[in-house]
Length: 306
Image 1 (cartoon, rainbow, N blue to C red):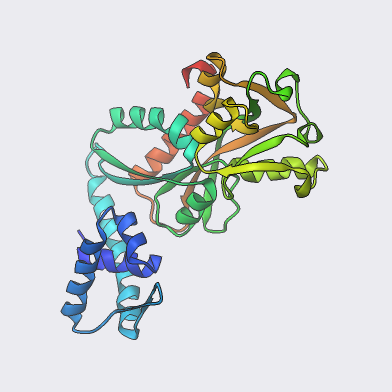
Image 2 (image 1 turned 30 degrees about the vertical axis):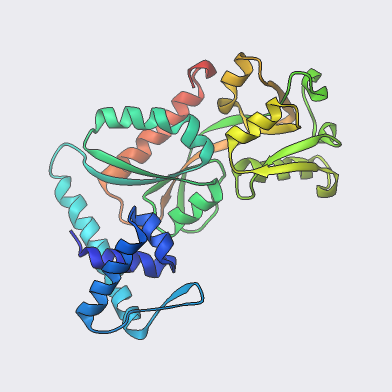
């Protein structure tokens, strides 16, 4: 309902980039540029300074941005209040999620939620847990599903469940014969790690540190954002990795990988996070409640169903 030009301007100013604003709004960059041009023509003044790869606000832009924040917030609240007069939930839901949750938990979550509320349109942004947490804290997303315990002040968190992390490797790898593996047992073996900011990367660092293993003693052969690539390299015998139990069940059943528990056991939390001070519609609250309940249920279900 709010002026589209204001929405686009607000996104560009908040992200400091036409490209990132376009990604956030699911628009092309030329379309974003056109909307900004239209708004500047309306006010007959420049609102943004472009240069050196950075977008900054002019004095007039600072004023427009302050009012845009208030107008967009009130517009969102108005839409939600009126829609709540009907029994059926509808509207867009902006969800951020980690890569593992997106691949192995979110499909069933969205399937069930869409069956209940077919008029809801989820818009999903996938990234690592740390990036998702930051975007929720910045109120760019309505809700986040992550695998780290959030401690940012702008976040409200709900612990839904936990998922065990296991060492995975080729069946012929020397580690495959172990019943369990302590941090020191992994020294000297090539480690296929996740990318910095990924929940498993963060938890693995803590596991090695708690086990008395220094960073220099860990033989990292790759740091990867793609879980599929991590599993492929491990299955090809290039090293061991640490992965979510939910993400490797098919690989284990089909014999491509062997999984060995860590000692002591290591778990990744499954957390539902919300912006603390953002207006929360019935749609957002309903999805957060549903996600918390369903993640707990799925975590307790037999792994073959995931």
